[in-house]
Length: 339
Image (cartoon, rainbow, N blue to C red; front, side, top):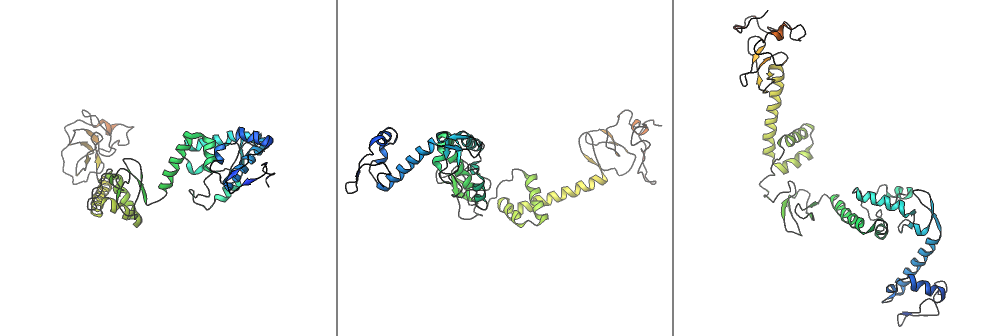
């Protein structure tokens, strides 16, 4: 065994010392193998490290086909992934990993080989079995990208856990005991906050402030209409059931008014005031802004010659000044001449 490792004579286990390799191997080892690795000597560690070192040297001298670009390059320009043993040229895999890290796709920083893709099916995206060896990642992307990879991988892993949220002050991960718990307190900065609105803790009896009333109300309204009890419960926990019931009642009234006004009234084209005509012709004057308009089509008409709109052959309201007027309507015509 010792000759296979190119070691000379004996290894004295009692004194925990070794003889350095002899000949060409000794010169090679002194030049390239860090002596710090055999300080505080441990035989198992030394043999494993030495075997890896020799294997790497052999790999560096042999040609290998890249699994991405399929070019054949020497091992010193390639990398042999420690977990799956697939080989790629450094330029290809380095560029691929750096792009993923730059785009924030931490769970995609994995071996792209087809066998590895098949292996990953059915596994969680943050499973330790999927994650590449960290030494390989560091070697390929450099310290700056590696630091970003570690930081974002940790953050995105926490985000997969429904019991973990993030402190709005220092961005530290904060765990809670149950999914419904609203109170969170950061272990780093001690900030107590509400998980739902991420504001300073306001107590269980005070509900989160509704910052977008129309959006939240519509969301709750649709959840009730569709029977989505889970979404209803989530919104009620955050904003209060009574608060939401009041907002939905107001929304119902608004919808009913809009339905009525679309059939029974016309909006002023200038100020949008909704106006119902109870009697008279279709020339209307807005009581809010004094704008003259047609009650049929809602278009602005000339204040000083309002009936030209109804006399215009090209108008959809031609000859419709009295359209919809009941026979028993009792009204006085405007003091304008018209034909």
